Image (cartoon, rainbow, N blue to C red; front, top):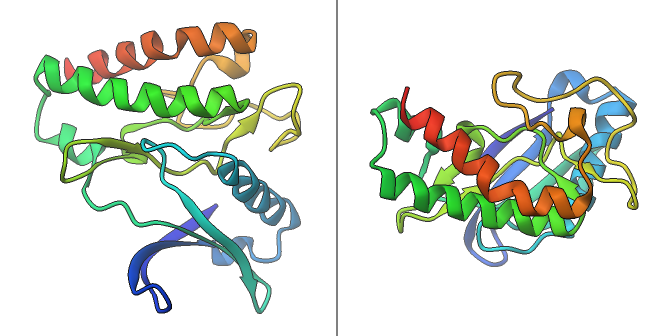
Length: 187
């Protein structure tokens, strides 16, 4: 739905990530609506394991997000070099689980968690990126209308199909994340 560029914030003189609606979706009202709703969801989240939203704006009809630039390497690239040691995999899983738990406590489900949407910083911490397919659970405004399941099919979270309660979802997050990472480390 969006394309991300590294950019420079001229006022604060810092690197940022600029996420812009894809060219082919510029005139698609549903895509633009979902992009705006992604911004609203991200604005609710402030956690050291989730990339921070700084701003949302529009220029000449093109919506864009200004996000924290997260230096480092995607988990996908890290895993391409081979399995991680168990202690490293656990540390990454814990970082991701803590970030997702924070989102879940706000009623926000990522729905596209995959190694490409996680960056390992130079200090070794994991940060979750790209809430473009996120959904707010019942009791809050929905990010997407009732629709088919979205996300990478091999690793899509079970929430859209099993619909656990918010407390079940929050309690199960670390176990689900660790199971996914354990599987990816053994491949």
